[in-house]
Image (cartoon, rainbow, N blue to C red; front, side):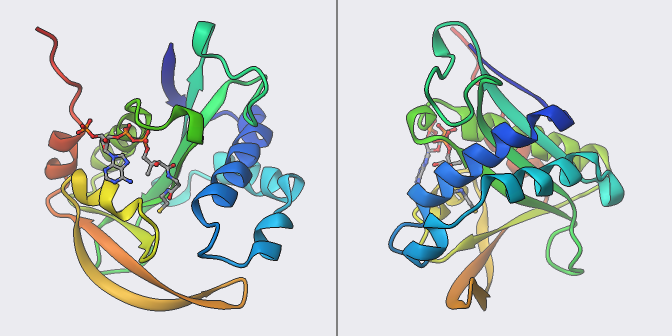
Length: 192
Ligand SMILES: CC(C)(COP(=O)(O)OP(=O)(O)OC[C@H]1O[C@@H](n2cnc3c(N)ncnc32)[C@H](O)[C@@H]1OP(=O)(O)O)[C@@H](O)C(=O)NCCC(=O)NCCS
């Protein structure tokens, strides 16, 4: 069984492990191999611990945890059962979506099971609750996950060149305006 809940500070090491595994998988061939190989779980765990505790600008971190038969025995998010996470809050950049989904990562073995959609729903509901009428996410132009955001109704609103680890890459802002379009696209599937 997979559940979504607000992250606790103790989840930080598991979130960092999922971050490293998901980055190495998603950004292979997009970002520098050495940079990906050198990602530090310890440093990221400290970063996420701060992020979980930081509630400024409505910031929130959600985790997807797996229990029972779904529990990841040898997977990176191991003991805590963390198989994915998302974070975000009020957008720090004005004029491009009132809320921002800053991170969204799901372990490879747990993809295509609705975890990403449920995490996006948790983020959308949270952003709506803190008063955001629209939402956006940045995605690297070469990341196939941009089609996931398109699938959930996000529309490309802007491109820009950035540097990640000293490397020039292009990112695309995907926008849901109004945010209800994201809530509708992530609504739980009705049974029967
Ligand atoms: C993007 C990501 C979060 C999607 O998570 P997921 O759990 O596999 O997605 P879901 O199973 O909830 O998919 C929901 C729907 O989107 C579709 N979908 C999933 N990934 C897709 C993709 N890359 N392209 C197009 N559609 C996609 C699913 O088929 C599903 O469709 P449905 O309407 O038939 O149900 C996951 O692939 C991931 O972590 N990718 C690597 C990290 C990354 O790039 N994150 C984004 C950083 S900006």
